[in-house]
Amino acid sequence: MSVLGKWRIVELPGYADDYADMVEPPCILFEATGGAFAFGCVTGTFAGGGDHAAVEFDWSGNDEMDEARGSGWAEIQADGLLQGEIGIHAADEIPFIARRWPSSATAC
Image 1 (cartoon, rainbow, N blue to C red):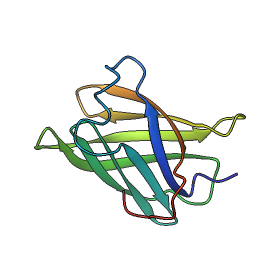
Image 2 (cartoon, rainbow, N blue to C red; image 1 turned 90 degrees about the vertical axis):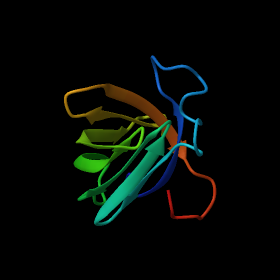
Image 3 (cartoon, one colour; image 1 turned 30 degrees about the vertical axis):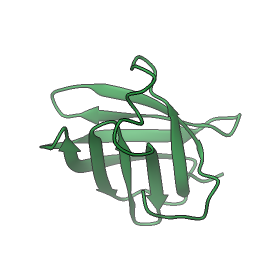
Image 4 (tube, rainbow, N blue to C red; image 1 turned 180 degrees about the horizontal axis):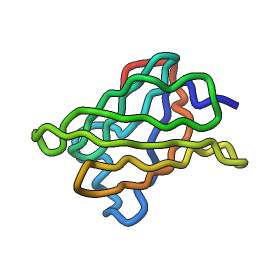
C-alpha cells in the first residue's frame, strides 16, 4: 500500500469536531515528489514523500495567516486509514486520521 493520492482528514483527535472544516474541506495530498495539506486555519506544502506506506516530511505554510513550518509523518494502518501528525515548529503537534478521498481531484 502507498500513501500516494488525496486523503480526506476525518478526525483531529483532541480538537473540536468543527475545527478541521473551518475554512475548507480538510485534506492531505501525497504525490511522488511532494504534497500539500489543509485543515482548520493551517495550510502547508512539502517536498519528498514517495510511493511508501509510511512517510516523514518537513513542511512550510501558514497557521492563521502567519508564516509557519514544521514536520510531519503519516502511515497507512491495517484498516486502510491514514494516521499521522503534523507538528508546528515551537507550537502544536496535531494528530490526524484520514480516509482516501473518493474523487479523482488532485488539488488539496
